[in-house]
Length: 211
Image (cartoon, rainbow, N blue to C red; front, side, top):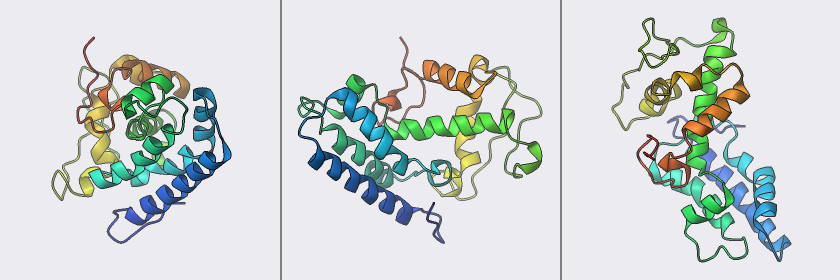
């Protein structure tokens, strides 16, 4: 589950899940005298990553200390692979084709937004979900941006409908018009293949790099 707190900082939840994930990484380190790339990826995805992603749409962090705390699990884990000790974190991720956890959270937000338009019953969606009546020319599935009540660095700014609007609205029509969720994931991954955040969790730009 997700541990709630009165301030909605989710710090206790993040600390708890990071400790759990780190303990599993420790077990992996003690259990394998040799880890190749393929074996590591399978083990990490199966036994570690889901602890750091369950319910992330609700508790996704906006403070750098929490973002780093979560990412450090994968930073530490990828050093277990034989021959990877001298590589930088982005270099390790590129060789593994394993995105940052920060990128995974952003991708998860977009998948959840897609479901709002294409999968969920409109009658069960909250009032905070406000599709635009007059979409822009980029695509017809636009969301009305919400002005945060507590400033650009506040908790409300990081709430789901506040944080996803601008990013979702900038996606191309070819991505958001996908007929199925799997097609949407594939098209989004192609569109974001050069997103700096994919292999660098410290990246601040959310625009794909020019080729």
